Image (cartoon, rainbow, N blue to C red; front, side, top):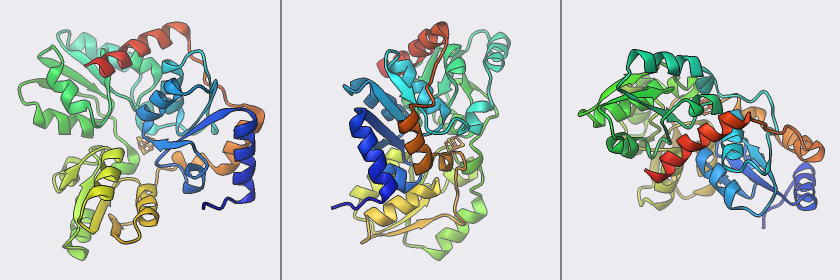
Length: 303
Ligand code: SF4
């Protein structure tokens, strides 16, 4: 039976009183994840928000995750606990950048990683997640693809789809970008029997060592199901903490020093409590942006 601290109990009381649904991303602090109705990656949060009967949805994650939930559930109230929890990678590309790339490569279609603003999704042809990017790139009816914003995920996909020409935007996730080849080699030397799982937001010279290259959800799923009992994790440090707690019989190692997304850590338990208490901060999007971004997400789901 889980035991909750005082503030967690207050959050749970408010959640019940307001009939709110709390969805948390894997990278927010564990004490926030522990009071959530579900812990998942960004697009799964948006999908769960759609299916839920609750009209009040709290997205414990960064801004673009709240936007995705609002895009798919425009009639619901979507709240973000921390207004200044943004995603530096999402902020690296603007709609103007996308329009410029379109003008430079008129025959290309724009594929946009879901880690992007609603405004960027609105000017893209199709969205993708880290787990669906490869499938969508292969199926997309075109010979050239403009991929935004993540240069590393884009490079990973481009290498596996040589029949298409890729134009990559140069954005990156500062947290995953920090993991170096030297970190991986040192960790592999220290744990020679471990299976190395890595997120495709990492650099190419890190991803190339991956025994499994996958989204956060795929890494978690692998760790839970594999018979291997030594796993090296190449992604954000909260995943390492979560798996160590969840799988005490397995040896879970992070790569090098801990790789922390500072924005995800802004989603504290205090911020969540105040968010529920005051029903702030509401995600609002312009009507046109919402509709066009929805079309890009729908094309991802239907492709
Ligand atoms: S881990 Fe990277 S991609 Fe995810 S929210 Fe943080 S900065 Fe953005």
